[in-house]
Amino acid sequence: MGLKTLHETVYEAMLRHPSWGVDELVAQLDLTESEVRAALDDLFELRLVRRSFEHTDRLLAVAPEMGLRTLLERQHDELLRQQRQMAERQASISRMITHIAARPVTAAQGDGSEQILGMDAIQRRLERLAEEATEEICTFMSGGAQAADSLEAARRNDARLLARGVTTRTIGLDSIRDHGPTLEHARWLTSLGGEFRTAPSLPPRMILADRRAALVPLDPDNTRKGVLWLTGPGVIASLTALFDQAWNQSTPLGADDPAPRPGLSEAERALLHLIGQGHTDEAAAGKLHISPRTARRMMAAIMERLEARSRFEAGLKAAQQGWL
Image 1 (tube, helix red, strand yellow):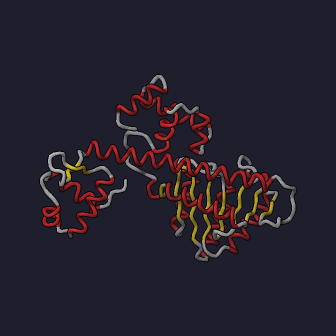
Image 2: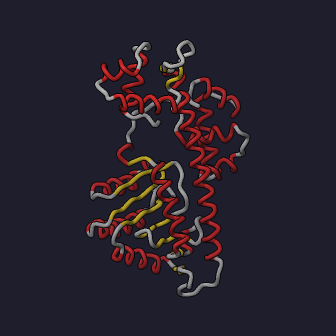
Image 3: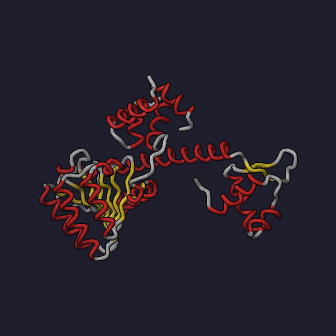
């Protein structure tokens, strides 16, 4: 939530000792004056401390239940902003790819694109990519649970990449944590040094090679129709930025067994917030990069957990319980 150990130390000391000023914090916490003042500036920006009404030259710690709620609200707003930005970036990329894919099929386009049709041809390109990549392979593993033949082919290619010292970073859907074979593959990948994270929703499937070329489906709803091999700098820069943003918002595989806790997941909180703003299931699903069916299923689960008879009641009860 933007807090560092230094922030926590100073904030907790101010809660316990409201009369302490900079001098006391320096002496009691064994910190330098510049460290304390920098921490106070940050805490003031985070709205965890405020100026005293009686002594305007003194800062007071805000009660945790108020200050931390403000931090959570800011974090939630930032999450929504990032999701909107990702949706806009994905829409722009989709328009570019659709424009390229709509042209007549040729062996290779002069603008750095090539259509590859047929599963055999796609597999040959993937194998070639595994042999030629030198630095990094980044992948969106969209679609949730993977078929056995897809996992087998991915394992062969990933093994060759990792053996040559190529970095692999993969993002799958959170749902794969409940699918044994796919989760086993992800753990196998990390055991060999690959990196794997998951997210509630993802853009269409993509493989980004050395940040210089990418494979994307001609039809996101049916990857067997064929793929586009893209090398144009503009498209690759956009795809790279999209992957980096998704990676920073995803959860490492090592967090696959979190302790159960009440409340909403980030995806559920974002969905309920959008529904509360008047968005339909379809509109909310589009902003969260999930299918309308998934959005309806998530909303039904939220209502059941809250024992709510309507969406309005669900939003009200979630707010009352401090989930929003």
